[in-house]
Length: 336
Image (cartoon, rainbow, N blue to C red):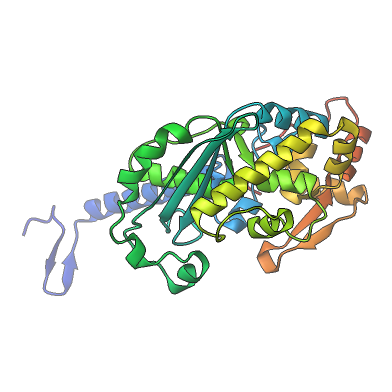
């Protein structure tokens, strides 16, 4: 028998002791490498928010480039600057909530400017190449039969590449649509990325200007403003509704006086993660700082998804009281 080899003889395993030691050392090295990869992903890597589930997104501190990190006067200037640019509104219908496990079933874009109105519209069904659950069918009305003859995303999305990379990318709850676009293009080995300063989320804008509405979902806002669009949760209708909403809110930002707008901004309810970003600190330190200052909050959500919400005006007033001696923490990218 060649004892330098590992082999099976019946049910008995014979090993060379030195080979066994090398295997054990190799396994130990593998476990060490895996441990450090885990640590790196836990502390140093911040994934694309669009690819995360709701709980993970709630735990992220936003990028320093995020508009949510801006003080109200800068935020007003930012949105007014966006209002002068062409908008590319996108809406997707999908087989589920998470881009790593779900696929696109319909895509629509609306392009235009506040000055000229709509200049281009484009939409089509997409074959997700997977079943569509009855629950999703009840929401969107899109059945497997409807998409069975449609082209898959790898054939459809190249036709949308140019418009998706031009103008200000706009959507209602943009992180959802953006995450699916990133994931689908990634499956094609294409890299899709837009700067945060070239993005406009009408959910965020609605929270600033419509803070006291009971709901800022797109169907609720369609009813509130009586927008003449079709059935909600179809890409064509929702893209048009988002365009009309963006047009309405950006026009208000252009026409209303600064003082009135800043007063509205102050009423915005901000989740803890955005409040911490505005304070320039981690979520843990931000929660402590807000508690120490006695800032009132309300809680929304249930269970693990529950989060604390703070008025923007209260946070900015606290910032005015903070020392300017450089002792504050720098803005952090964190997943705590």
